[in-house]
Image 1 (cartoon, rainbow, N blue to C red):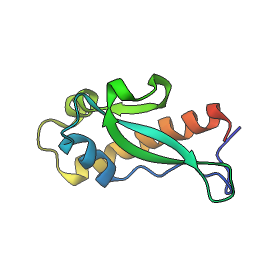
Image 2: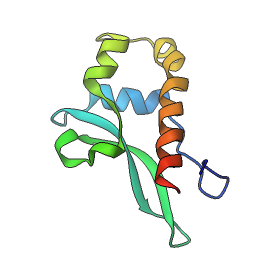
Image 3: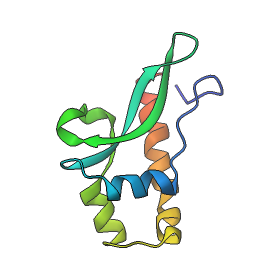
Length: 99
């Protein structure tokens, strides 16, 4: 099932990646947080939290992987060029979850 207009996949932004890189959490990860939607269904959003507190299948990107891709102090353009790859992963994860 693909993401739909009713249940779109959250859009990954440069801000999401910067939040991951700047997080003070232990082993931070960018993950899909499936919270309750306005209509009683499930709404997905991106969030950053410690890896040990997040279900493994919901993790989109780890800080370690982001640092490998971008280095210690990446430019916004460098991050923006990587966003389609991360967005594809998010879309696929939402699709597999069946939201």
